[in-house]
Image 1 (spheres, rainbow, N blue to C red):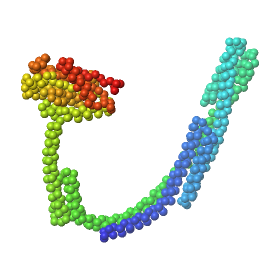
Image 2 (image 1 turned 60 degrees about the horizontal axis):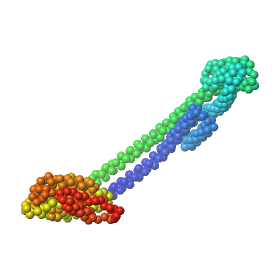
Image 3 (image 1 turned 90 degrees about the vertical axis):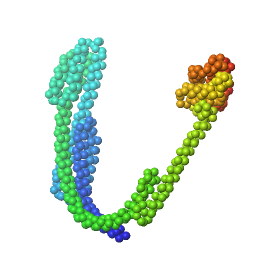
Image 4 (image 1 turned 30 degrees about the vertical axis):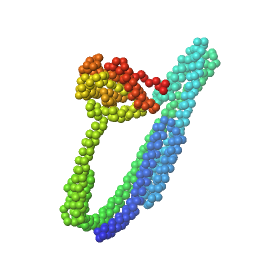
Length: 544
């Protein structure tokens, strides 16, 4: 309680000192910082106005009205920022105001002159566009008259060459940039007009068109040169505006830099004061740390480390990773460790006994499983195991609508074989036939089982009738190739009779029907002389 009480007192003192320093810092730096930010905003506004003027100059459309509105809005924004800066306090010196006014007044005056230049240039461009339209109309009229050239008199036919040439020179002057080029095009155009004047035209339409050419073309040449001069004057005014904008931006930026330096100096003074305060607080914190360190060292070493060690040992045993359990000492922690060690040893002994019992039980279960599903004589699946697999494959074939094949086989004259050679050789014969039948099945789901006595049954999932018949013939051939002697058979060896059936079961079908059809096919094989494969006919679904 003493340690934490001292800590609370020190923390309260620290908070009070930091709050006092914060209040002083806000009072000393707040005004400088605010003025520096407004000066930076003023710099940005001046640069934005200059950029807007440049965009207005180089824009494709040079919309004077829209450009003027944007520049006026930016100018108002600049003036509002300037007013805010002057309202922040008395730190704005008279020298700073004079410097800003020195460039601000001529800059805005140049903006007005640039706007006037742009308006005049736009008016001249409008006149030039009108002249282009007039030239296009004249060219259309010449083209319309030229369409009937084949029926015109000779003077009118001579009219088209000079007229088109004069129009071409007039159109070319609209894109000319040099005065010499304009004079040359004007000279060529006048020569063509003089040629037109010498032609003695007879038709009124041609005479009227010649008069319009003589009136319109000189106006085109006379308007181009003033437009070029005005464009150059506009460009010169724009350059002057740009220079003034740069000087205004530089002056505002210098003022911003001075305010920024003043703010940084005030901040540095406050930081120095705070460093001295923090030094005293650091000494108090160091004393608190030493007291807390001494108080916690004993608790950690005498109690916490031992409890953590015991807890880690318990967790390791709980995860199945046995480690040594700490039991040293003569206190409650050591007695807890000894008690847990007794519990761990008892549990380990019980788990060992349980594991041995589980192993013995698994071995017994495997033996019982084998006895219940494997035929003892032939060492293949018995009928119980076959019925379980047949039921499972039948349900799967119903769900997936897949074919299910079945083959029933019977050893021909096996009773006679036992009577002649004895039951011991009969059992050996059954074992050999079962082994060769199992060896002919290569798919994972295929299965052969002893169905009873000398009968065998083969399960063939996902095989259609013709595929199951192919497997049955392979089984018949394999048994023949065993070449087991049988004196009571007309073939002299042991043979099989096989019945084959297959179906794609519906929900209404029963597995017993498939087994019955295979059994009938087996009976047919026996009636037809044995040693053969008979196939059950496909089901008549419509009849059902």
